[in-house]
Image (tube, rainbow, N blue to C red; front, side, top):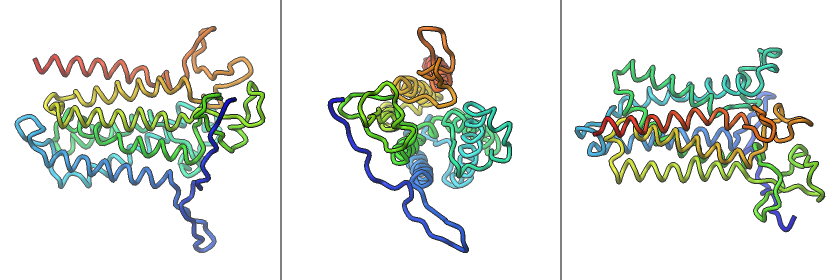
Length: 296
C-alpha cells in the first residue's frame, strides 16, 4: 500500500439529548433524507414556476399540490426502502424476526426498494389529482438527484457501504472492525475504496447536473418521459459501475464466493446491486427511445 487516507473523525450523530430516560439523537443520515426531500421540493417548485419549460407552456401541477406530493413521496421512500432491504438482502432473517421489519432506526434501507415505493406513490398521486404521469415522473426524476447525493455522503460519514480493499492513494482506512477484515491485505491497516463518494458523485452530482442541463437548456421536459428514461439509465449504469468497487453485502460472501456474487457463473458473476440495476438500465433505454420516437 503506497498511501491511504484516514477516515475523518465525524460523529454519525449531530447531537443527542436525553428526555425522560430516552436518548434522542439527530443523525446525519436522517438529516440528509430531510434535506434531500426539502431540496427536491424546491427543485419541483422552481420548475413549475417556469412554464416555458413544459409542453404548451403549461406546468403539470400547481404549487398547492406540492405538500400532498411530498407526503406521498416520503411514505414511498420509507416503506419501499425498508421492504426492499428486507426482501432483497435479508429475507430469511426477517422471516424469522418479522417484528423487526418496522425498526428502521436499526438501519437497513434499499435504494431500489425506495425507488419502487416512490414509483407506486407517484402513480397513486397522479391518479388522485389527475396530473399527467409522464410530466410528473420527469420532474420528480430531476428532483431526486440532490437527495441521492446527500444520502450517499451520509453513508460515508456513517462508515458504511464501503468499498473493496485497494492500494489506490485515495483509499480510505475505515475504522470499523468489519472494514479492517481484509484477509488478502498484508498490511496492518486496510484501505478501501470510498465507494459511497463514488456513488454520490456519479448518481447524485453528475447525473443531477446532466438532467438539469437537459431540462433547462435543451427542453427535455417538452418530450414526455425523456427525463425519466435518462434518470433510470443514468442511475442504473452508475450503480452497476460502482458495484465493481463496492464491498458486497455480507450475506452474499463466503469462502466459496469471496467476491459476493448474487449470481455466480464460475469465472464471473453479478452482485445484487448489479442484478437490480440491470432492469433499470434496460427500461431507461427503452423509455428514452420511445420518448424520442413519439416526438417525431
